[in-house]
Amino acid sequence: MLDDIVTSFEPQAFGWQAADAAHHLHPFTDHKSLHQGKVRIITGADGVFLTDDAGDRILDGMAGLWCVAAGYGRHELVEAASRQMQSLPYYNTFFKTSTRPVIALAERLTAMAPDDLNHAFFACSGSEAVDTALRMARTFWITKGQPGKRVIIGREFGYHGSTTLGAAAGGMVDMHRQGAMLPDFAHVMPPYWYGYGGQMSPEEFGLYAAKQVEDKIHEVGAANIAAFIGEPIQGAGGVIIPPDSYWPEINRICRENNILLIVDEVICGFGRTGRMFGSETFGIKPDLMTLAKGITSGYIPLSAVLVGDRVADVLINDTGEFYHGFTYSGHPVACAVALANLDIIENEGLVARAEASGVALRAKFATALEGVPIVGEIRGVGLIGAIELTADQRTRRFFDKRGRVGAICRDYCFSNNLVMRAVRDTMVFSPPLTINDDEMDELVARATRAILATQADVRAEIL
Ligand code: PXG
Image (cartoon, rainbow, N blue to C red):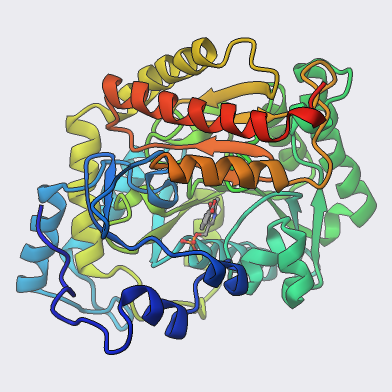
C-alpha cells in the first residue's frame, strides 16, 4: 500500500493531532468533547480494512459513510479517473455542451433504473440531489398551473442531507432547531416497528404507519402538497426497515392523492439492499429517485436525480428554463469513475453477493449473540443492518437517556478496531459489498466483544 500523499507536508506545530484540533472543524461533531480524546488519523485502506497512523488495521463495518460499495484499493477506479483527467479533466454541461462520460452514464443509469426513470440530472452530493429533486417537484406543479402544491412530506428520523432543503425534508430535530426548518415541510412517523409497533404485528404496523401519511395529506390538503420523500430503508435514522405492507400503501396513497413520490436511494442504491435499487426490493414506484454514495463507491463525489417520464415530459416540454445547476454537474472525471464502478458491480455480481452475504452475516450475528440480554433485535436486508440494544428484550424497552448506551458500544467497537455507527442505541452496519466470509466472521467477533463489554457496563439497567 502506498503512503498517503501528504506525508511530505508535516504540520508546523505539534503534529497531526494538534493541527487537526487547532484548525479543522469536523462535520456533525461536538468539538469540545472531540478535543478531550484523540482523532484517529486514517492513512490508507485496502479491501474492507482501514489503516491508521499508528499502524492499526480497522475493519470498516460502515463502508466509509455507507458508500464504499466496491471496497477500498480498486485500481480500476483509479485508472478511470486518471485516464479521464488526462484527456478532459473538466468541462461543464451548461451552455449547449456535453461530454462523453456524462452522456454514457446518463444512458447507463436510466437503462438500469426501474420503470420509466429515463432522464438523469447530475450533482456532487446526496444533499444536492435531494435539493434538486425537491426543486423539480415544485417546478413540475408550478408548470402545471398548481403552484399551491408546495408542501413536502418527510418522516421523523429521515435523513436527506445537510443543505437547508434536505435538512427540512429530513426528520432530524436537532438540525431543524439550528434554523434548518422551513415553511411547507411536514413530517410523519417512520415505519419503525421495533420502536413504535407496540403490540401490533409488523404488517399491521406497516399499514398503520402508511395511514399516518394519508392522514397528514388530509390534514394539509392534497391541493397544497407537492411530494412525499422517503428512503426505502431509513439509513442514518437507524436502519429502519419498513414492514412489507408499508411501501405498496405509500404508492397507492401518493397515486390517489396526486402527490409525487421521491425515493431517496442515496444509501440503498447500487446493491446495498440485495437488489440494484431499494425501490426494487420494496416494490416502490418513484417519480424521482436520488442517488449518490455507491454510484462511485465514494471514490469521488457524484450524485444523480433520475426523473420519470411524467415529470420529465413537463420539465422538458413546458417549463422553459429550469433555473438550477452546479459548476460540477456531470463532472467528466466523476462520471468516468461511476462507469468503472458500475462495471465492477456488474462484473463481480456484487448485488447478488450483497443479498447472500447479508443472509450469512445475520446468521453469524444470531449465533454469536444468542441469549445476550442486551440484544433486542438483529435485522437487515442485503448488507445493511442493525442491532437494537435494549433494556428489556421482552417489552423492547429503550434505555433511559437514549444514545448513551449506543455511544458506549460504538466506542468499544472503535477500540476493538471496528467501525460501526450508533444511532441512538441502535448499532448499524453496512460493510463494503465485497466483504468475504472470513471478514464477516471478524466483524461479528469484534462487534460481539464490544456488545458484551457494553452489557457488562450497564448490566444494572438490564432486566
Ligand atoms: N440522503 C440520504 C438517504 C443520505 O443517507 C444524504 C441524502 C446526503 O448525502 P451527502 O452526500 O450530501 O452527505 C445522505 C447522507 C451517517 C451519515 O452518519 C449519513 C449520511 C451522510 C453523513 C453521515 O449515518 N447520509
